[in-house]
Image (tube, rainbow, N blue to C red; front, top):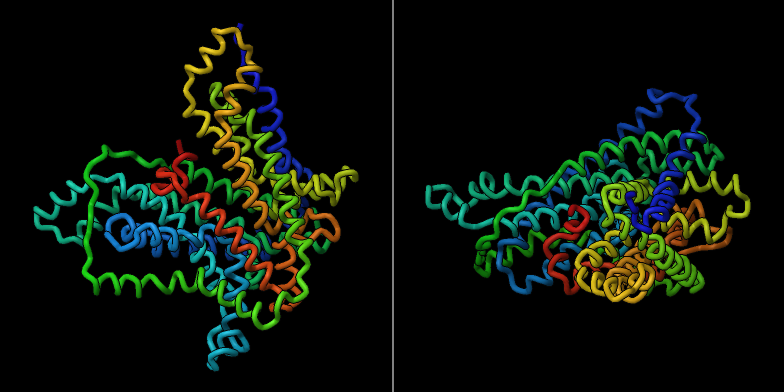
Length: 506
């Protein structure tokens, strides 16, 4: 008789709950409008154009920067990597908000410098913002592929008369293609699921119109649009799952030593990206803080963010433990784990729409902190699962076997050996969920209890009201939280330096 791991029942229940939002959307959706209506086709076109432009822009910026950080021996290389990867940790709506406020007639640049600049809005503005905050996906995945390449092939090509630029084009980049494609697809997925940037830039995409329909009490239409968006997200996730980085045999890495003037030129070329993505948001929020002070900011908003995010982090690791252990127990457990990853691919606005309907059916849950925390857990559970699983897989199994030989039961082995040895992964997973929940905007807007403002939703209300000066404190706090997230990603672990997403692909 086959004995299933004890983690399977709990993991199976969690997998079923992860599927619940999709089932709810099918139940709720109003299909009367039709997929090929004029409005739907316009939304589809805008959404696809934003996705394609974001993916292309992230490749055009991310690949050269990957080559730069992988091969060129610059002074303070760690600092270069941190600065260039930093936009990955910032929520894109921060950049959209500050670019919208800085550029255009009457913007902060005109107020300070006296000359008018073009307004950043629409498809071009949204594509620019999304590119600035998604190119690190391509940077990190491509850099990981480049660092795994053996420089002897490049040297052989140079010996045969190929120039350095031609070597990069014909020898290096083709072998890094899978890494480039993986990063571009991640950027596309981010663009599909983002709500704040299209909304601030005035671009009608699926996420923005879903929110409009929800506010107009059109839950059926919101669910219908959500299913269409999920279909596109599912296609991107499928393409992403088909991209596998082929490891090469380790060899000598390529080192390029630039002259001082070349280093200066590199800094000049790279600086506009960092100025727009990092320096501008900090400068605008600092300017507003100096000009208007705290703007009547209530620290309750920060406490609300911390409270909800802490609860989400704790709940996520508790839920993630049986899923992570089930994934190591066999094929059925791995399928359950993959099902829970569905929540990470569901845009926050879609998750919020589904859970609003559940809350309406169960009044005890509607507009409660518990429902909001549940949304956070369902969205970001894969972060906790991946962190715990990677730590647990590196555990010395001989300790578990020795404990069983000495008479310890499964429960005691888990409590006294597995759980303590998984502590590092548990803490890291809880921290990642905490930081993502702090920045989550659309699900929080839809599900937060009445009067329960977080830093993200307060910033959104400020944008809607047009009182931009009051955004200084919440904006700077969110940037600080993002900096902590970046430190968690990049500090101390070589595997993170080589690729943030490697663990999820194993």
